[in-house]
Length: 314
DNA sequence: CGTATTTGACCGGCGC
DNA sequence: GCGCCGGTCAAATACG
Image (cartoon, rainbow, N blue to C red; front, top):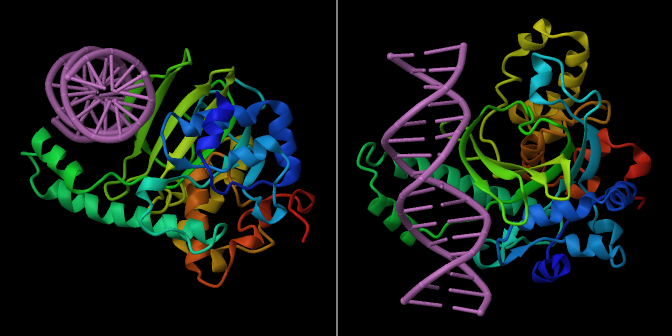
């Protein structure tokens, strides 16, 4: 079943070997895979290579890391879990029938391509919505969908060992749906970024084989800075322990949103990446690739946040 | 009262 | 064509 799904997809997913081992041994990989495949056909996801652990090109591996995270509740009441950790997995996700601008290269450039695709949708959709503020009937929606086939945006999924479903990631989300998931006793929640012009979505569910694992999938890229980052005083009212965790997790997405990756990142920024900031991560990657000449093969964020031994040797 | 969440209905894609 | 399923909508409801 899982492998059957895997065979339907193909793409690029990367990881450092060490983390991959952790994921694999921890039994998390399958959860991520199932989650992100999510019954959607025709996607391209490279986890089959990871499952096989055989044909993995070191140069194609990136973006799977293990990092700490904080549950949303950690910002006010004490977190239910003393040491929640996140197992993060980055993946490119395309629906083969919906790719408008295939990546020029199979690895790094796929992200920038996907990003532009996401931007296109973000820019066009609001205009359509304002076309008729009140008379947005179902017929109109239907016609809209008919004329413009829904585009699938790149996705990023990661797993967090936490009792809290909705993890704080520095952005504000509005829940717009919840559905029972087949083969899982836990519902899947659907969230949308509350920022008007931002079309980023995320899905949150628990791994069917391990209820303690929360699987979060981001879709799209934020077009705005993180609200948390734009409120720097926020951490001043927070307990020290939370401050540390918060700054660790969220400093990067805000930086990424405010300045280009090439300027905002440096090898001296060891605390720049947040596990629950997967969307921020995507954003970071976008800036990275938009930086034109800066290739992702330099690991992007990973080189700054992941111990060097976890990065591939070249 | 404004905002966020809940939840049943609806829609489209897909397999049979 | 029909049913299943994932995803989304939107009215109702809850909350601060």
